[in-house]
Image 1 (tube, rainbow, N blue to C red):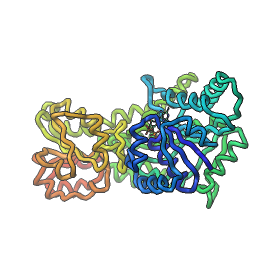
Image 2 (image 1 turned 30 degrees about the vertical axis):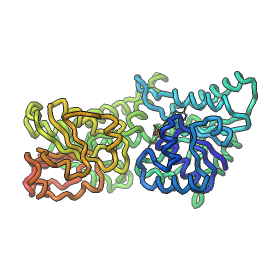
Image 3 (image 1 turned 180 degrees about the vertical axis):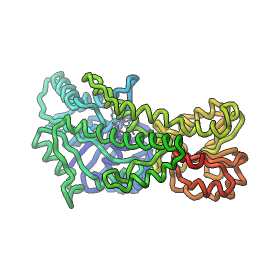
Image 4 (image 1 turned 90 degrees about the vertical axis):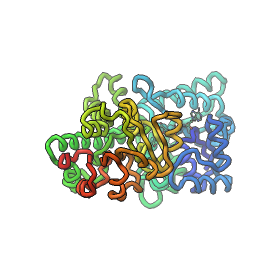
Length: 445
Ligand code: NAD
């Protein structure tokens, strides 16, 4: 089938590539000419495991094309996806300006029946708005073209996006049009072969499902961080508690890891946007507001542990901290709302210097923090340790899991590790003569 995607970010590029991989004929449109030029040269503007060879192979085979020409994209696709960003606006609402802009462009160019599919995460009611914008444009042109607007929220995870897209847990199709549903079932057929993964529902339920999923996951994280903080107060080890509760299948092992708070481009903005949607219906989402408040506090926790170790904030002046991990989670280069940013900024405010290393987030970090005298972005984990007084681990990349602690003891002048993801065993670190601080590990405090 011929499909067009507007937006070549994490969602649009991965989805377009996976659709091309299974044989569809795909055009990806973006307003960012630099991104499109790179993609046409076979350069992938984001880090996503497994994506590069798939983009290159499908591009070479002619099934995956990139353009800034919206009209060309719209004339190509019988199905047109909207996969542009929906960042938070000043009030915490989803900013729909990019979605509306694409809807306007679609309305300005469609000439034959088209299924418009909204893949961006958008508040309930947005499909109606997209429909109205397209209808308005058609009216301005004085033409009558049939179109459907479908909600098809995306559930891929950065860092494992290709796999999620090729083997989705579920594909949600929100639509009341049998023709549109049928077309999407055909498009997604190759991902739906062994058992039924396509769930058809009304548009509003589909839109809400995406927010409910992210809010549930964020709730699990904040819940566990709350328990971790209690564990710290009462002298318990949250890692033992985690194992104690995760073994209950009703609770399960996923998303119960305590840490330095959740970040990224989705959880923070989606929890806030859902709360704002409810607020507009005069409903207060007390649980979600607490999830967000706990997370905000948790992002400062690693810094609080550092201050606790050194006695007061003043003692940090002139210290140098090695920071391992900057991306909001492993296997991505995404720095949006990353917990590392809070820590870096708190350390700098306290007069400390930072030597940081992340396997993939170097460029995205440089784009945020340029030319700072108190910041060195290093090429290797060990380089970040040179001249450092202590180490803070913020992102749980696999390569940080088994450091040589006796070597660290010789390198870190103040012999202290602040483990924001509970990667290490306190006893092992302490046996090497290093002070250990984890999240919710009251036992070692
Ligand atoms: P992104 O910021 O990585 O990419 C968005 C792209 O859209 C950019 O390349 C931008 O240039 C382009 N764009 C903006 N206006 C455009 C226009 N008028 N025409 C064409 N292109 C345009 O965003 P993302 O992370 O891919 O997220 C996209 C949507 O999917 C968001 O609503 C997000 O909440 C949702 N989502 C994201 C993830 C994720 O893990 N990143 C997962 C599920 C859902």
